[in-house]
Amino acid sequence: MRMILRCLMALALLIAPLSAPAGSARHITIAAAADLRFAMDAIVASYRHEHPGDAIDVVYGSSGKLLAQIEQGAPFALFFSADSGYPRQLVADGQAGGRPVPYALGGIVLWSASIDMRKVRVGDLLQPRFGRIAIANPQHAPYGKRAEQALRAAGIWGQLQSRLVYGENIAQTAQFAQSGNARVGIVAQSSMRDPAMAAGSYVEVPAAAYQPLRQSFVLTRRGAGDPLARDFAQYMLGAQARGILVRYGFHLPDAAGG
Image (cartoon, rainbow, N blue to C red; front, side, top):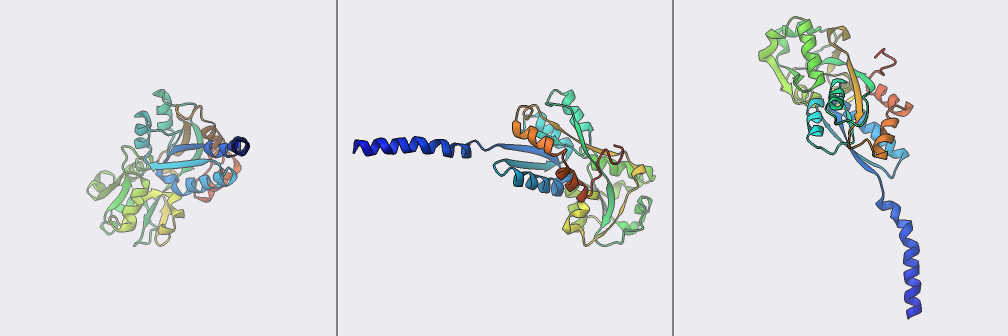
């Protein structure tokens, strides 16, 4: 009996190292601007296909609110912002683990589920037939700031105040337009890849009407020493991730002079 027990113990010691790697799987949580939802989901899926042992969770929201969460201690390893200002702010506040890295340029469009928008100009939104207009909150959403700039450039910002509906982020703004809470939404060009938006029509807002949406990411101080965070940051600069960004309506910084 003692001999059997010794054999079983020896076998257990041999098996234990084989099962250890399962407990050492890598995991990170990243923060990403809401305009990235579809593209980032695809990029994470692509990364995990190549690295099946790794787990990456993504929390989406407005860039300003994600910045505030990171500075309040949220456990994000990487911060993907809808502009470059918020990552620079994270660096200035001593909460970053590196320099901001540009990864994409975004754009805004006018979209409606019920109105043919293909020949509409921003200045036309003053007409009563366009009803309520949804934009992201300019206080903390870069796409909202660009919507405000476009409306100001058209000279109608002040006159539209009573008809504006504010989303907490660009994804909620699109939902307002989809649901009928607003007849028109000034939303991210990348959201046009959302199947739910296919039933409507849109027109691009001329890039000259607003400051460029140069989007950057940065390692947080928490993520600076995490190998998975650094690996995923490098993956974002590779051909596979960049191809996905283009497919989902983004431009690449070097290809657009950004």
